[in-house]
Length: 189
Image 1: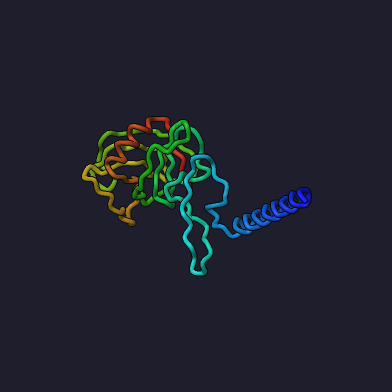
Image 2: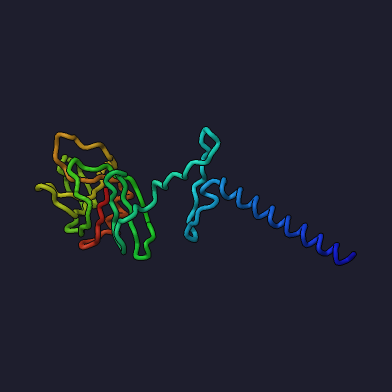
């Protein structure tokens, strides 16, 4: 009888393991993506928000994340559509990111180098600016980053052709320290 009991227990154990495996498979098939997708070590997952039907939506992309295809190495990345700048160190870490107010004339996506810098000048719109970091020229208009001395980030007059990409003064200080002449600027759409 001991022999049939152990066979019975083994059969029950096998059936229980099969049931647990099946339930785990079903749970993973219906689990929200953020619980099952593979992520690089250290990457955080944004929580998924249930849709009206009760199913999970795909997590939204992190708006502060460095854009894909934005180069490599130490660089400044400027995303035209996001109106955002990232300062990236040699270990591919974003050391700072911030929003900017674009000029009326925009550089084409591509890789540029810082050509000149000025500590404090009058902008093409007449506003006193500081920490000017120039990197491109488009149809005779010089394109560069700057901060208004008065801290303003006003939308430029659309009737004027200007190339100043404005930022807050603290962000201008950080960019000035980071982007010296010949530093890489990558512009993405």
